Amino acid sequence: MHKQRIVVGLSGGVDSAVTAHLLKQQGHEVIGIFMKNWEDDDDSEFCSSNIDFVDAAAVADVIGIEIEHVNFAADYKDRVFAEFLREYQAGRTPNPDILCNAEIKFKAFLDHAMRLGAEKIATGHYARVRKNESTGLHELLKGLDPAKDQSYFLHRLNQAQLAKTLFPVGELKKTEVRRIADEIGLPNARKKDSTGICFIGERPFREFLNRYIAKAPGPIRNDQGRVLGEHVGLSFYTLGQRQGLGIGGVKARGAELKAVQALGQRGVGEHEPWFVARKDMATNTLWVVQGHDHPWLLSTQVQVQDCSWVAGAAPAAGTLAAKTRYRQADAACQLVAPSLTHAALRFDEPQWAVTPGQSAVLYQGEVCLGGGVIAASNTPALP
Image (cartoon, rainbow, N blue to C red; front, side, top):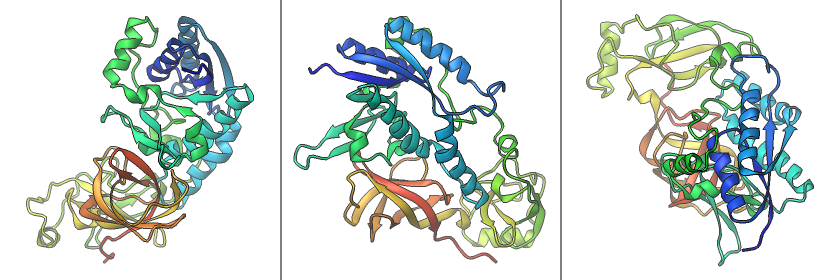
């Protein structure tokens, strides 16, 4: 095997630690880089970057590699956070982790690694890269552990980025990654996986967003148009949201209950939970419905824009599979009128709480083809 200089993004977590170890074992020259992407509240109890760097440095010491601390906070604020706020202010729900991968981890970080003389970069993502010998193209594949596959978050990577990228743990199950970490005595072998948005961490989301977006209260209405309460601002809610609506004690009236049940929602009772179903920016109204399977929460057609295709060109129209959110099984769909920037998806089965601003990602078997940002879906008209 050709020995290479490989720069690994060491996050302080177990996946990137084992990534660095595996590459060192293969005889490569491995350099660790810790990326600092957020510095607005370094002293906050929620900002764990200082702890993460200590963990990453301890890992580098055990593995026997150099580590460099690089600050990408300015890039992050310009390329990721500014877009994040714009989307929330427009009433959509963005996925900053997808943008962070495309703009920071596989752009700013990749550029930095190349300046260090790296031939490749590697991260602890659960995904795989394969070169298709017949087409000469690099393919993005799902990770082998179905419970951990992260190809959804990587779907905006292009040919140039994939050609320079390795995902060693994508070939492993998470249990095996933990076992390797334990075996070689990594200090973070049992460290809990990070959750939440990359720069927000475990903090209460609404509290964080309120520092950047002003509250703009308005009515909460049900599908019959009845006002149930007041929301704090449409930016603070997402479609399908069930918690934090402040209307838990409100019951549907008899006529409303019958109307809901007439729509085919058998078993919907007056104590059923409420879900966010629409955000009407024009009237500053939050629309909610009772019952998980209310028609307003189900879509069979989805429009996507700002597409990014792994192959550099749109796939052919036809039968594929897609996810409209990360924690979701692949759903059969028809790709209709795909172009470099736009496409439509028609699903065989209704999809739940399809959310503008989130990404719809397309698959052909284990191959991730790319995807786009959800712009709209076919849900019934407002009353």
